[in-house]
Image 1 (cartoon, helix red, strand yellow):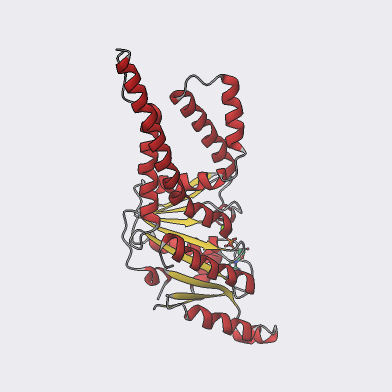
Image 2 (image 1 turned 135 degrees about the horizontal axis):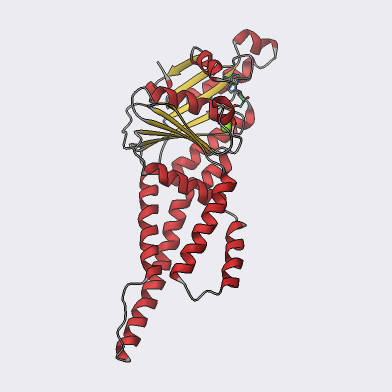
Length: 315
Ligand SMILES: Nc1ncnc2c1ncn2[C@@H]1O[C@H](COP(=O)(O)OP(=O)(O)O)[C@@H](O)[C@H]1O
Ligand SMILES: [Mg+2]
């Protein structure tokens, strides 16, 4: 049985597979394994949002890049810094358009404030996921940054929807007041308000994102850990986060870099490894165990070799 067998059934319009885990556990490696397999059943995009850019090394890409590995598998490595610059100029243009009274000086200050605002990285990640949802692919595999940033990103649509409903309420009140005043003064007034229309668009976008990210049918979460205390701790935290904030259960848990029993014994790690394996099975979710290749995986032939080291337990 393969990793994708454990994920099925998968809708494909597109179906989003989000691979989450602590830095270094093998998110990128597992993302490639899953994307390669999915590309055999449908058009697949492997979208790497991981700043570590290990994907680029595996596939010989450089910087932010796009590559057609073959007809069915496309790979995109996103450069967060570049995207932050693009997002800030997009917002500057938008502000100029909907609030033309802003002086140029003010606008520069606002652009700088946006660039250094906490959360701008999460905003970029979310915009990339949003783009992927509207794409023509059947499957989009998302290789994520380390857990903290990923979870904050996944929580954003709900937070934005709360803010937006309040902002829309305030803006609607302003627009209707403006209308009443204009009527009283006998002036004609354009009831279309650019800012309000933009807020409505944003609400639609975040509703779509939220509904897909919280849907078992449209999104699958794959949590990766290695048999070590911290990665396992993060896996459990992520499980709880997904359950309580998005109301979803991960589809697959992966324990990567598992040592063969004899070596684990020599290193005194046999008991710990066994305990973690037992713990993984206790979630009642399908899980996979990937053996340590005994050397760092560096290229696609190492990935091929890794395929023979996977055991899947479907629950
Ligand atoms: N099963 C494995 N056996 C050997 N090396 C592995 C295995 N899985 C991952 N690695 C190596 O571990 C390092 C981290 O893997 P990577 O997929 O980049 O993790 P992440 O994306 O979570 O940071 C890389 O050097 C990779 O080659
Ligand atoms: Mg990575």
